[in-house]
Amino acid sequence: MCFSATASFSSGIALTLIGIVTVQSSRSRLYGLFASIPFLLAIQQYTEGVLWLALSDPVLADWQSPAMFLYLFFAQVLWPVWVPLSIFLLEKEQRRRKILYALLIVGAGVSVYLGYRLFVKNIFAEIAGYHIYYHVGPISFPLHVSAMLYFLVTVLPALISSVRKIWLFGVAIGLSYIIANLMYERYILSVWCFFAALVSIIVFAIMFLHGKQKVFI
Image (cartoon, rainbow, N blue to C red; front, side):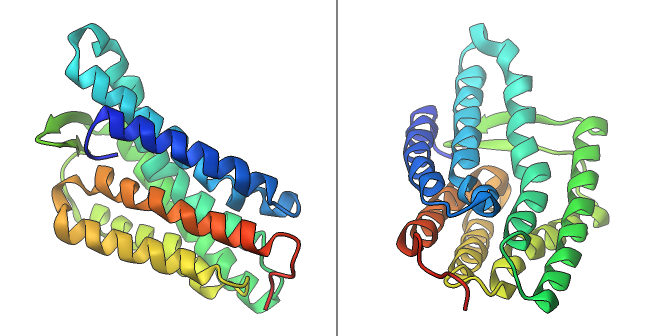
């Protein structure tokens, strides 16, 4: 979360509760990855809450690096694979599965590249005003390309999928990214995850409202 440790932990608690409902509403193991998105976002928010505390209190300074790298692992390495994979597993139409599989491969490439940067670049975080700013190394052309591909692999799968109402998930993520980029460009790694946390409500709606109903168009 972008505003404070309290906000991060509060968001984490809310997401945990949503995650409990979404997982319980899951019809089968195929829905497991998609249904667990709120849980993973909760862990991510708890992690940034710990980072807030570590950056604010010298006594907790030893927690800065582990919390920061775990947060960035979720933000940059996990989601480019988890989102397209979770939607790919739900898809039944072969033509769409091929497209989703291609996006999954692209997402894996983005994940590997961004993960590589976490190990080789001078990465650190600091509190700047009411946000956490993540210094992720020099801005380069490959990084810009990976950012664009990141957007595509986290938004397009939901728009391509035949699962009923899941397109709302893609629209919500896309709009949240655009708004965060326009309003908080320097802090987008932190702020967008706040908006993405709100997107969990969409996951809740998809899993809970459909329940045992037929969810494919």
